Image (cartoon, rainbow, N blue to C red; front, side, top):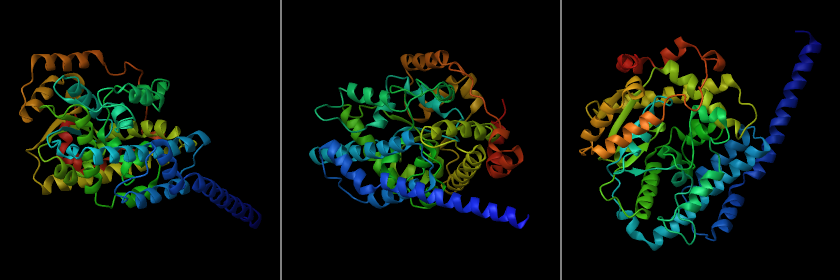
Length: 414
C-alpha cells in the first residue's frame, strides 16, 4: 500500500469512527432511561414500579443499543415505544399486584413447554396444542400487553387485541408472513415476555443485533427473569378466572439455554423438544432475524447475521446438553423429530397429553388435527434461504453442534 493510499484509508477509518460516535450521541439522548421511565409513568398515570432491580439492566440495554444498533428513524422510535410499552406494563401490573395479592396464589407450575432450536417446528407444536379447548393459550395480544388496560378486566380484551394488531405483525409484510405468521390472536412464545426484564437476550433476537448486550446478559443468572415471567403468567391466569385445570401451553427457543431456571419455576412442567437438522435451522433463523431487525436497523449485514445466530444458538445448545445431562432429564423430555411434526403430528400430541397426565378428548384431538390440516406448510409463501446468503457453511455448523448431532442426529432424518 502506497503512502497516499494508506493516508486515505486512515482518513476513511477516522470518518467512520466519528460517524459512529455522532450516531451514538444522538441515539443515547433518544434512549435515556429516566426520560423513557417518566414517559411510561405519564402514559400509565402511575409512578410505582415496585422493585427497581430492573433499572440497572434497562440502563445497560439502552446504552448498548445506542452504541451498537444503527437505527433508522422509524426503528429508533419503535425501539423507544417497545421500551415504554414494557415499562407501562410493569407499572400496571405492580398496581394490580398491590390491589390483588391473591394473584400470587395462582398455580402455574404445570405448563406444557415446547423447546428446541429456532425454525424446528416449535411454533407449529405450540399452536396445535393451543387449538385444544382445555388449555390456556398465550396469544400475542397477551404478550404485547399482559397488564389490564385502565377500566377493563381480563374478560374484555378487545382494546388489547386492537393494540397488538396495530403493532409489528406479519399482516402487511409478506416476507415475514412466509417465515412466521404473527397476528394478535395467534399463540406466540412466552420468551417474548422476558423483554420486560430488560435483562434477557430476547432483546438481541427480536429487536436488534446487540452482541455486547448478549455477551453481558448470557452470563448472568436467569432465575430472577423466570420468576418475573412466572408472575406475569399468574397475573394473566387470574385475569382469565384462574387455572381451572387448564395448563399453559408455552414455547421458547431461548429456554434451552436456561433449563435450570425453567424447571425451578415450573417444577411440574411437561417438556417437549422438537429436533431439526441445524444446517436447515441456522440459515432459516438468520433469514427471519434479518426481517425482524430490518424493522429497527439499517441493512443488517448478512454475514454478521449468520455469525450471530451460530454463536448464540451454539452456546444455548451447549448449555442445554450440559444441563440435560447433569439433571438426568433424558426420560423426562419428550424428543420429537421435525419430520414427525411436519407430516404426522397426532402421535406426538397424544404422547404429550399422556406425559402431562391428561385425557385427550375427541374434541381436543379433532381441534388439533384440524389445525394441522388447515395450516399446510408454505401456505403463506415459501421461506427461501441458503447457507451462502449468510456466510454459513455446513462443516462450521456441524462443528458448532457436534455434541448435539452425536446425541440426536438420528432424529434429523426425513
